Every structure is written in structure tokens, then in C-alpha cells.
Amino acid sequence: MPDKIAIEKKVLSENDLLAQELRTKFQENKVFVFNLVSSPGSGKTSLLEKTLGLLQDKLNIALVVGDVQTENDADRLIQAGGKLVRPIVTGGSCHLDANMIHKSIQQFNLNEIDLFVIENVGNLVCPSSYDLGEDMKIVLISTTEGDDKPLKYPGMFRKSSVMVVNKTDLLGFSDFELHKVKENARQINGQLEIFELSCRTGEGLDTWIDWLLEQVILKKKEI
Image 1 (cartoon, one colour):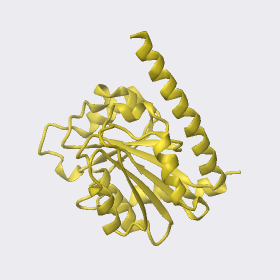
Image 2: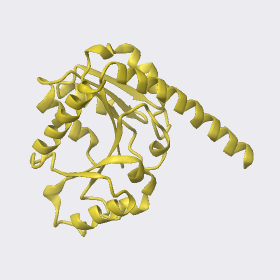
Image 3: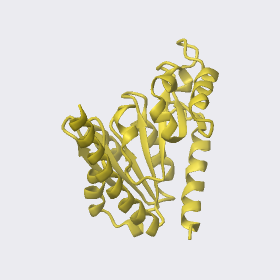
Image 4: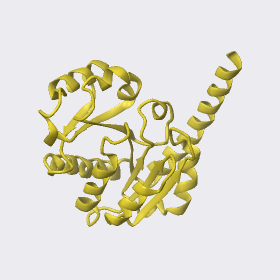
């Protein structure tokens, strides 16, 4: 057991060093970067499809899309209008790491990018341990899941800056309670910013888009 722990610490240490290099590159080019995480099926790709549709004429957006076996999500984002989309097929790994992102950004001119999106593998455990050089993690949860998800996966909610609650159009069709998920999330992380929206109906998307634009503008103003 001690040998296993030592190896895990070494891997994470190497990842953190490379993540800091990535963060420096992103900061030098004033690119706002977020790492989108969720359970499978919560709607990460749907949210990014809507985001591309509403922002692709206003911002230069690059996306790195992680999946275990297919490039299906990357293909969806290209069809949604994404011009700079790079898939990462992990071949079984339950998360993206800094080395994967480092290899992917070689294909981009960061100086021409305003917003860099990392769509992580659908998992609320492993991705919480891996820094990818992002400005923030954004955790997405849907109303088809349990409202106790933040309590079950506290590490992810503790390390995230934003929680997006998707599929609000389905509220009332299950026992999921919006006030409870927000209460549970803030019990873990009192600083979480929370958005409520429906990718299907479009409700709440304007607030999400306005916030993203604000983050990009703030990043451009950083010295």
C-alpha cells in the first residue's frame, strides 16, 4: 500500500507541475479556461452545443472533448458550429490529465482564442484530483439525478467554483428538489455560484451566456 500511495503522489505532483505551465500559457494569452465536469448523461455536451450556438459569432472558442471510447461528443460539437474542436479518447481512463491537454493545445494558436473549454470525462470522482491549468472547474448536475449528489461527491463540489443545474424543465417529474441540491452544495462549498437552466427549452441560458462573456472580458483586462 505505501508504494501505491507514493506512485499516486508522484503522478499528481508531475501533473500539477505541467498544469501550472499550462496555466501560465493561458494567462499570457489572456484566455479564459474552464473545466466542465459531471456524471455521464447530465448534459455537458448539450450545454456546450447551446453555448456554441449563442457565442460562436462573438468569441473564438476552442474545445477539448474527453471521452473514454468514442469521438461522438466532439462530432456533435463540430456539427453545432465548433471550429476548433479536438477530441481526446482516453481508452479507459476516467479523467483527463494535464499531459493530454498539453498535447492538445499544440494544435491551437492561443493568441487567437478567447474561451478555452475542457469537457472532461463523465465522472465526479477522478477529475476532481487533476488540475488541468484551468481558471475554474464548473460542475454540472441535472434534475434527473439525486439532489444529494454534492454530499456524495464532496471533493468535486469543493473544488468547483460554479454549479450548473440542468434540465429544470423536468422539475416535478422526480423527487429532485432544487432548493435541496443548492442547500447541499453550499453546505460543501459556500462560495459556489449557481446557475439553473434547461438546454431543451432555453430557460436560463441567457444568464449563463452573460456570465461567460463577463468572465472572458475580465480575463482580457488582467495584467
